[in-house]
Amino acid sequence: MPSSFDLWARGAPSTTAPTHLPPSQQQTSPPTPTDSPPASTMADSESAPKFAPFIGMAGIAFAMIFGTIGAAYGTAKSGIGISGVGTFRPDLIMKSLIPVVMSGIIAVYSLVIAVLIAGDMAPPPGQHYALFTGFLHLAAGLSVGLTGLAAGYAIGIVGDMGVRSYMQQSRIFVGMVLILIFGEVLGLYGLIVALILNTKSRG
Image (tube, rainbow, N blue to C red):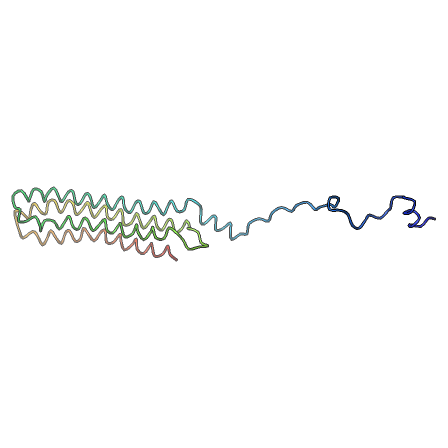
């Protein structure tokens, strides 16, 4: 029986496969599918979707829109009464400006919350703007905005009728100021709630 050396010498095909093949003839294993993203990454994408910042920006818009509408109504409504008083009693104009000043403070409440929310819109590196944070900012904006709208409406009506009555009876001035204060505090309640919500959004 011929040996393996004789078969090799005669050019017969070898039954053993060569141990070393050129790179072009080597069999490559099929590419393995990419690993699925870890569960933590998937959870982050679900809790921090791409539209989450839009909800926070809506909170900024609602705070400024409703707050300034209330302040504008209070200023305009009180201004009508002040204009009527100034026609007959110009000396009472300065005291009659109290409703206008208190209406302007309502817009300041909304501005403070809008600035605080805008400062939280850019999270630290490595973190995402969460959906929960967006809803907290939306609630904060609506709280200060709608309470400011209600306060401005109350101040406008009281300021208009109050200054007209003050022109005829000076004793009504103290009562008018107290009513304006209780109308203004409605917006202050909304500011307090909005500050608490904004603090919760920071963890």
